[in-house]
Image 1: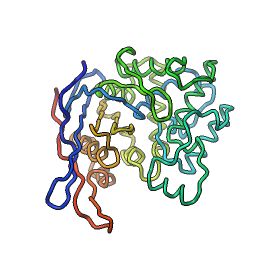
Image 2: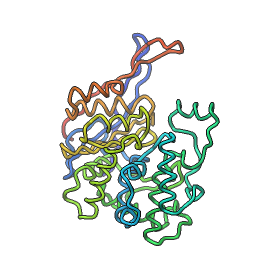
Image 3: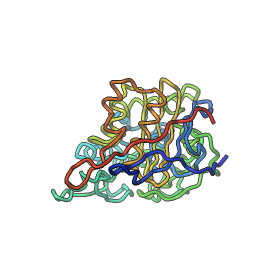
Amino acid sequence: MEGSSLSEPLVRVSRGPVVESIHRGDAVVVNTSGEILYFIGDPYKYTYIRSAAKPLQTINVFLSGAQNKFEFTDEELSIMCASHYGEDFHKKVIENMLEKIGLKMEDLNCGKTLSIKPEYAQIQLKENHIINQANNDCSGKHCGILASCIAKGYDLGGYTEDKHPVEQDILKVISMMCEIEPEDIKLGVDGCSVPVHAMPIYNMALGYAKLANPNSLEKNVKEGCEKIFTAMNNAPEMVAGTGGFCTELIKNTNGKLIGKLGAEGVFCIGVKEKGIGLAVKIEDGNYYRAINPAVMRCLEDLEILDNEELEKLSRFISQKNINNLGTEVGQIEPCFHLKKEY
């Protein structure tokens, strides 16, 4: 079922006494049986999952035999799931992975980009950092895809094309986890050149519910899900980087969940103790100021975090609207509550 109802206001931006901007969006909470428990807006909003797909895509590293062949560490598995900032410790892990799988930096067909964290990108420019593929936020995912190609004996050429067997394998994994037929997943091309998958946010939430709670899945899939969940919790600094929301959310929630940002305002969370998945989409694609408050309001409504965890993450719940002099002139804050059932 593909939804079409209007997104609802999720985050408001005030300046003085006036609400100056509103970010609309949609969110849905699903259990592993596929039941919608809570929602706001359209729980079937159809959009690209973007980089929030990475933890699901990493399951193929286990199914392909690459994990058995290369024995990736928690740091290495975590960075496969990441949109990392290209900090020195990220680049070191990428270099080590390439050495482990016997490839060179030039084999990564993800492009050379500055850090996706604007503040760190400015530092890179000021200090004249050498920018190569390891700095790309998707380089970990590409290492995982190439490792799967090697394990399966696939040609490395054209590994980013949707018809390549490794991308077909990944499509099957996403279809299985999100319980949507491959032909119902529309494909585009992501910023890092690999296929990107579109589906209802309902299916994204379902995929994450199962990723965090894989007991009903086949043994090899279950093992992959468990190790991915553990790796992201053991090495959360790899998932984003210093001060990043994904990193701080996982680091400060005591093994309860994993969460992953996707470009254009997508965020997905899998919660272990409650057996649920959450997917959020900001309609205008803003993920610099809108996604964090929206996700945190969902977690508050679901009563997933205790007071100590909420306090540690409080800076992501609402933010000050700051002018050029550093003076607070307003607020950026959530303006919704989830609705029960659908």
